[in-house]
Length: 186
Ligand SMILES: Cc1cc2nc3c(=O)[nH]c(=O)nc-3n(C[C@H](O)[C@H](O)[C@H](O)COP(=O)(O)O)c2cc1C
Image 1: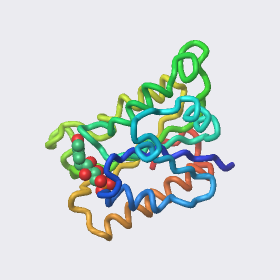
Image 2: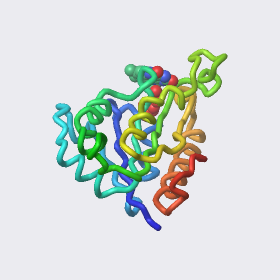
Image 3: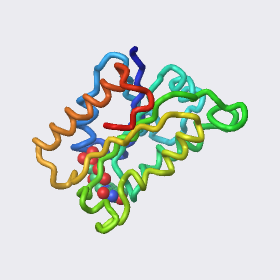
Image 4: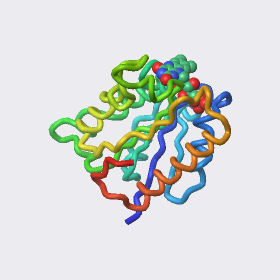
């Protein structure tokens, strides 16, 4: 079974991006994978809700890809959530349009993995910090997937970037080509 994958990409300074650029390059041009650059499409933040909802309906997997900014996402992805995930459409008694679709968060973080744990510098894991997204997916009857996380971007060399890109491509292909719907393992 093949699923169509929509990558909602949010990076406000893509010109300066190294890691997200490597990830995007790794999944660009794949059949049934749509890359949707939110900052490029909506430089003025005027998100077209109808268009975004139509895109969601055309895909079975939604990937939110972004750098971790202040333990969360860049602003446009929050704006996208606020406008696109409408009551009565995505959630609420009659809001079932996203039911059963998969949601994957793909995050790059400057901090090392050892900084993201209870006894570490940041106290919480990235997965814990992403709980609002998981709760949103849950509210919208979507199936949350174990997040794809690249740590230590500030010290990542070309080899680390290439390894992350290869792992991301494999993860996206597995989602596209039908890994179990309820799988949470990476
Ligand atoms: C405004 C801003 C906020 C950031 N907040 C965090 C953060 O909360 N945690 C973290 O680990 N890194 C943080 N970073 C570092 C970015 O996550 C990191 O630079 C990015 O993931 C690198 O990916 P790129 O090469 O695609 O830009 C922040 C960077 C900026 C510019």
